[in-house]
Image (cartoon, rainbow, N blue to C red; front, side, top):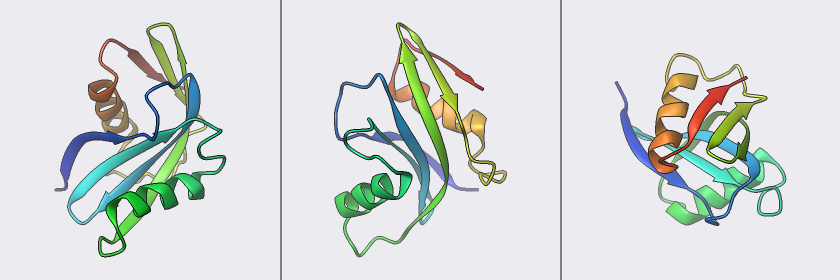
Length: 108
C-alpha cells in the first residue's frame, strides 16, 4: 500500500481552472495542479513537478485530468482512465479536498 501524501504541488495559489496529474514517487503519492498559463499540457506539469523534486527522485505520472473551481465547488473532469486502483478518483478527490479546504469536489 502506498503512503498517500496530503500535499499538492501548485506553482500558484490562484486557480480557477487548470490541469492536475497524479504522481507516484517511490511510496508517496502526489497531486500536481496548475492553471493553463503555467502548464498547457500534462507533460509540462509533470516536468515542473520533477524539476521541483530534483533529478535524483524517480517519479511516474499515473494519470490526470482537468479541474474547474467555481465559488466553493470544484469539478474534476476529463480524468484519465489509467489511474488503476491506486490512486483512484476518490483518493484524488480526498487529496485535493485536503489542500483546498472548504471546497466541495465532484468528479464528472
